[in-house]
Length: 80
Ligand SMILES: [Zn+2]
Image 1 (tube, rainbow, N blue to C red):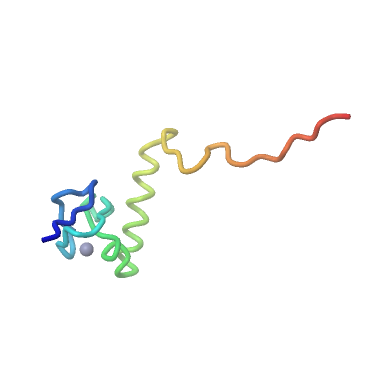
Image 2: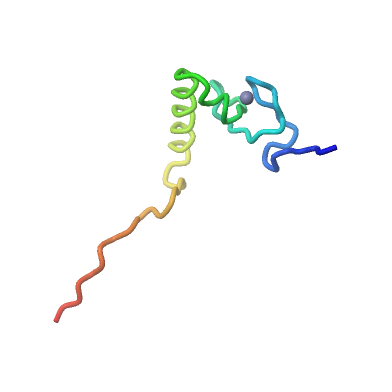
């Protein structure tokens, strides 16, 4: 009675466990959609997930923004 789908992964099932009611990420070996639990279920998969994540972030080049690109900066001292 509850057709629960993650909004961004509607109709897609996990490459590994084939559940559709979980949030999926495209971090499988060849960009397959996998769920968070599967992505980190073994050290090998965790390494693969992190490698895929890095590759996709790098592919974005300067367009990838995680937080503020400039970051926090020291408050400028006012001259007196
Ligand atoms: Zn899964």
